[in-house]
Image (cartoon, rainbow, N blue to C red; front, side):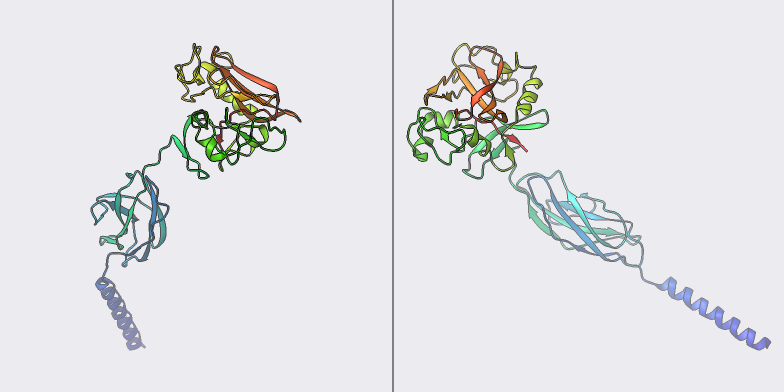
Length: 326
């Protein structure tokens, strides 16, 4: 019996010794990493990521992507840190320079060292002008301005899918006018100085559907918010109007354009089919009806700092439009 005990004791001791020996001889390697596809590239950022397929026998304590402009990025360059362990992850690469080629690869670190995936290459896009918007319908680039929490066009809308003689009117059918133009040719209307300076005059129905995708005709409340931001109806006109008398008649009272809204006096189409007050007055539609036949508007004038709020304006009149980003 004692000999059997001794045999098993020796066997277990030998097995434990061999286990410890094998464990101590186990080779630890750096992690194995794959770099994932680069996506969402714009002018200053992109997305990339990695997949840790093996931790090399020790826990991965850091992982992410690293990048530079010199072809072989390492963790000594700019990098992200995206958790620990094996598996996949996605990284956001930020603060990039527009129109620049970058090299990026995933990495993972354990106690042995850092392993890298293959290097990927991408080029950031051209710098985006944050103060402009290109209308995809006709390619026109509008100046824009951020006021409070809203982005406004800093020019009158000039979208012109069709054009009619000013004698043509409707409260319900959308019609488009160009000041002092009396034909029906869009190309001829677009060639006029008034179109290129002041944009298009819209009846209310056309105004409600003419802002580009992602933008809208501002409501009565949104116009009030804009005006209150610059001190209220009595003084906001001065801060919203373009300075000088290149477009406004003298004296262009109180105009400072502190807002960069750059309101210009595009005149309007009147009830009788005439065009009136170019250089003196500009009227803009709101999206808010005051009754079934009329809608609210705003107007500014060459001889006042006041912004006027009107409601008795038949929808068939021709007013300018400023769009607000959704």
